[in-house]
Length: 109
Image (cartoon, rainbow, N blue to C red; front, side, top):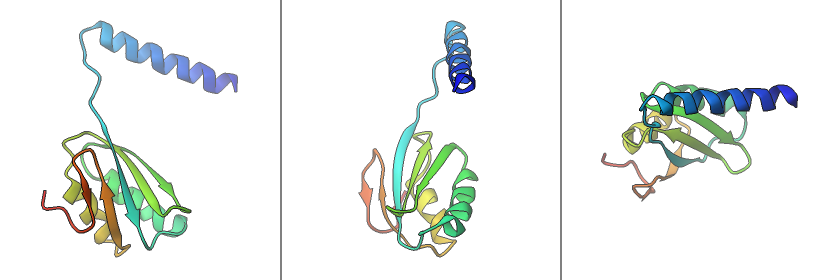
C-alpha cells in the first residue's frame, strides 16, 4: 500500500513540475465501445492491443461482464479508427459513445 501511495505522490509531483515549466496537461477524452463478442481475456487482449496501436490512445480498460472497452485517448482520435480496429478483429462492435456522440454503426469520421 505504501508503494502505491509513494508512486501516486511521485506521479503528482512529476506532473506538477511539468506544469510549473509552462507545459499544459494533455487533453484527453473517454470513449466506451460495446463489443458483443468479448466475454473474456481471449477477446479483450487482442482488442486492447489493437486499440493501443492507434496514435493518441493512452489506456484501454476492458469490462468482460458489460462487454465494453473504455478508451482514454486524445480527443483527436477518430471514432471511426476506434470502431474499425475492433471490426477488423471480427469482435462485433455495436455501440460507441464518445464526447462527440453515440454511434450504433461505423462512424463516418
